[in-house]
Amino acid sequence: MAEKSLDAIVVLMSAASREEAARLAEMLVGARLAACVQIMPEMESIYHWEGAIRRDPEILLLAKTTRGRFEELEREVRALHSYETPEIIALSITAGSAPYLDWLGRTVEPQRVAQPNAQPENPPHSKSATTNKG
Image 1 (tube, rainbow, N blue to C red):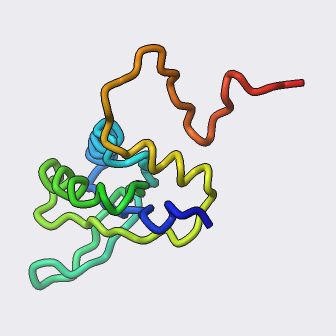
Image 2 (image 1 turned 30 degrees about the horizontal axis):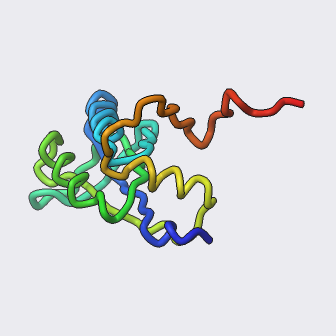
């Protein structure tokens, strides 16, 4: 188990529409508050709200980040979200692939000044252009 796994979290959030989910995901990844956000297909939520049981279609987002970025992630999601009380729940990642968790941690670190000649980083699910094929 990688040491960084103790800091890695998955944040579950629901959105009222696919468009809202996409806006939230783009903002989180663009601001490096999440390394990756997955947008799940529409689901039905059943819940208590204002004294009644409600049933509504919702979109689930799964954001991978770190505990250190959660407070800012929550603040930014609440500022953009259409719900009065949006679901923003963090679950600890207790174990995971060391290379993936390292990438996650590096991706959400606050950025320093870019180095000249710095190479762009490949996401963990893509093949590097320099992979030896022989």
